[in-house]
Length: 373
Image 1 (cartoon, one colour):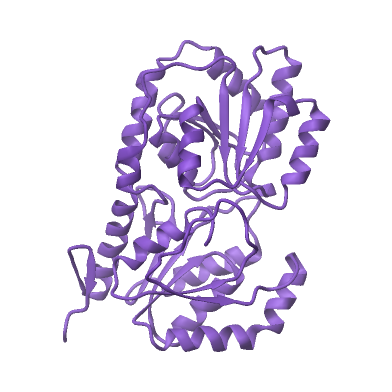
Image 2 (cartoon, rainbow, N blue to C red):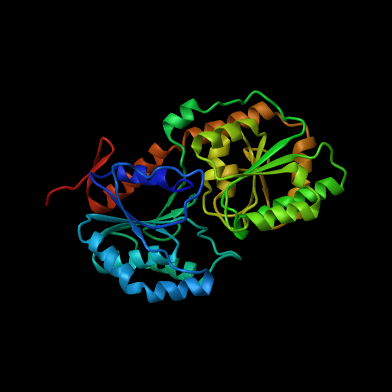
């Protein structure tokens, strides 16, 4: 089991090939997990210990173990797929390059430098730029008219399958509930900006906005306790529900009850939450980070953009959106139409086509085939 969109995306990547091995770090058991592909063989790596600097020391101490284990699997592989950034994925990328394997590397964080960019992020992106091309398929999560770097390509991010989209209720012909129902989806860690959302909610309460929106926070993480304490400190805990990590069906049910999605991240590449919300006809208020402008468009197109970390701007935008005369059905239909073009199947097809071009392979009925030389 795993959480978020990882298992679903791994199933998409696996569909391109005959066999798949997943070499992943073992994590703690949590509620709301999604099964990894049943046809994949799974090897669980021992996790590093601690956080931040202690984690780096732990990775360094266990480096021979990680290299030895990864190399044993890489030797049997025709292609190595590496989701970045991360310390162990970076080890995997360097090792795959040294072993001269065909590589699919996807950078999932913000390709643009921002306040959350680390030295490791910079090194990872520099390496990807340097080795891009030929057998190395280097993808950056995002969107744009120009490629992220020479010989690299953008790729959107999604966990939304065609089957899920077809059974997702598209309740587009409606306005806003009273009180309005907002939803956040994501990991509860500082860079996701949930504290900014809570402070903006307190600003609305202080300004006398009534009825005060109710916020459902979907996801889990190390910051959950601190965020619950902040909600109590701000006096808005009555308007906030911490729903925890949800599997896909409960997540869909929660989105069907919501009016608006708020994603105030300090850094982002292409958030899967944007598409999950839009599939349900929910416009998104998001920080202008990563591909947010390309996805959400101008104000009122498929949502609204605010500066990252600006609680006053977020509060003002929420007040405007919830009180202005807006054609909600038309807005919801635009959101749904955007999500329909970005399913997991379309994501997998785009990755397969990029690999086929660079490797001179063919993509036949959704599966990669190596051409004989």
